[in-house]
Length: 419
Image (tube, rainbow, N blue to C red; front, side, top):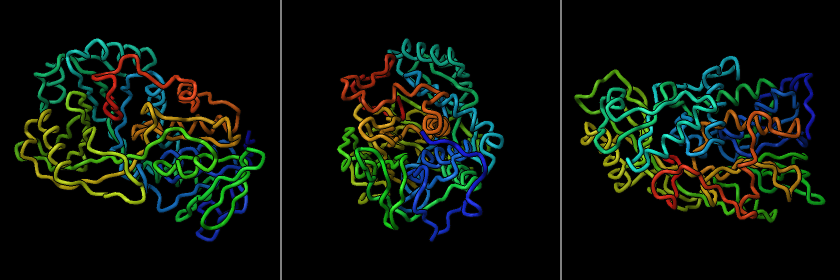
């Protein structure tokens, strides 16, 4: 357990100059995305003096920089909903909780659409969310049309509505965490790839990087699609698969209100999700447009097939967008676990190694809470904010992969964002 020291930071080294890679640290966090930055900040906030955050390229170069950044509490399970509920508190009170930058949180309202056959499951999930304090409710198709006038509503009976959820700016959120962490003494090492997690007697003793070795007894691996490269040499196989996730941006078409931003939507019928992008665009992702890939060698763009699938899914819910102009798109990499749910744990076989991985691209919104939980665990011996037991790495070896009780659609479908 790392003991927090509340005497201050690094005597001016907080921003981590390019030549300032330390030889030792209390905690090394691997991965310069929102998860890694959140953990690093929360550790420093709790008085851990020597925290180093490593990023192989630039901050946000992985999944965070490509994230759709929806911020909603609707899940088909309570643990992830609870993480989002706690994270929403941070997004809504950023100045008090983080104190640097801004996440660009836009609480425009969020709608979850399911098939009529899934009405009972949706009602059960909403009841579970209300029981833990989520601001949500079930609305009829007619009410959903009033909430979002662009929406086609003849193919579903009810929807879930969160009036004060929405989306954030993924990079601004990351940069806010990084700035707040640096002020508290966290060293930020960009262009610094972690090449090995070192052990002695099974326990963590350091991290080898492209710029030298850092001695440490505690490592947090939040390396996204690159995690297997550091886990495999340790004999840790969590069944993780790096996969692409693709999105497209369409220009708001003529005839649509040029000022009002539409609601954020997850549409399980069309296996898609979308939200406003900038002042005049809509960003949409469709399940099944990505696949397994090498994170160092993949096409960061989108092809005509992806564009057409996104346009069709968007027009199926917002008919006015049938002729919308495509304005851009990109592909990112996420890491998928065998049950498509996150793994947040201390690896039992490697004392000192904590991981956040396998989230399948669905954990931007939970990063604030996960950062708190892991910092609590590292400094105090246990996560207090949210019970992380459901996210344990051992569930696969135990023969207990995660199955949501009230899942939507084909229970065998590998839904991630739209679940």
